[in-house]
Length: 156
Image (cartoon, rainbow, N blue to C red; front, top):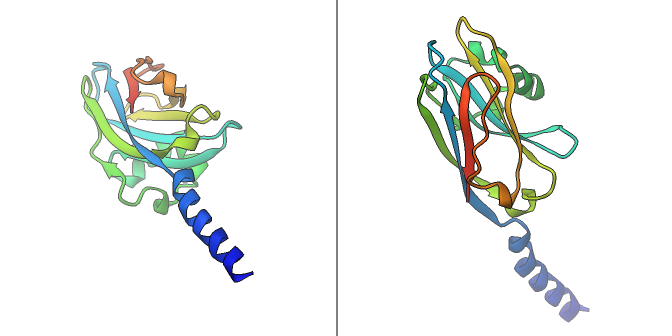
């Protein structure tokens, strides 16, 4: 029995890291020259049902404006623990936000979506400015946003 448990423990230890393998994914969000202040952006992941999974990055450091990232803010309940260590400055018009995140292999081609909410001071909010399926074949393909994003791409 001990030999069986030892083999089971060893095979589990060898198999589990393969299940949790992650790869670096670079997210590029290029804004249009919309003629306003810097944009706040929330990049986040949803599952096949559209339910929030996790925040990947938030551009914009003043939390009082996060409520304008409406879909993302509603999904997180405004909980600051959702963004610890993954925030940066807002993004100016015509500029590109480039961030690299680790995403598990199991998320690709499994119905998950990359989403971007956008908000600009004194301009309208744009929930789900971008929503694209997370697919290996989608890497490098530029997608235009609805209001502020000229192009969004992701690459492995």
